[in-house]
Length: 168
Image (cartoon, rainbow, N blue to C red; front, side, top):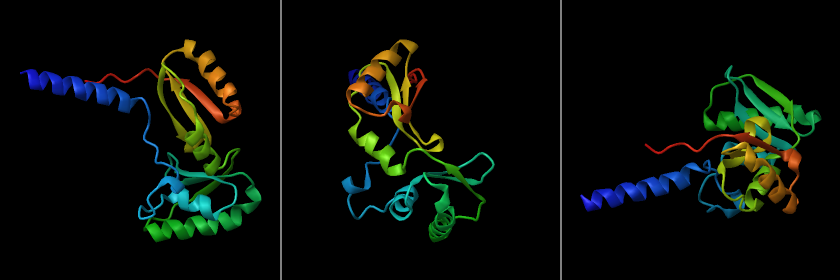
């Protein structure tokens, strides 16, 4: 009985920590070279100004580019990489982005400890921003102060209220 109780306590403790931060893969330079890059990582290496790729609700593929004049070249690269992965053809839509995939990853690598009241954080590729989820409105000012102190561009962040998930 005591062993089960300790196991439950440890599971809850680990789960609550794991739920606070969405899974985000380390940047490619931190990875073992034997681990294959994700599609976004490969595209970031090949397309100047690439801000991320994601599937939309209508099953089309959206691609953020800093400069839309590079759409033609980007279209070819995206189609080739998706073909290489064996993905089915899907319509491509190019959107004007403000941040490259590399910049969002760099923010993730350098973001300071945001303190308590954070329910999650990480690059949000579908919005071309860095998402910080807080547990209540009162956390907005302290989080913004930390970001300013770290000299991170506040425009790159979306701050949302998202309560911590309960571990059942």
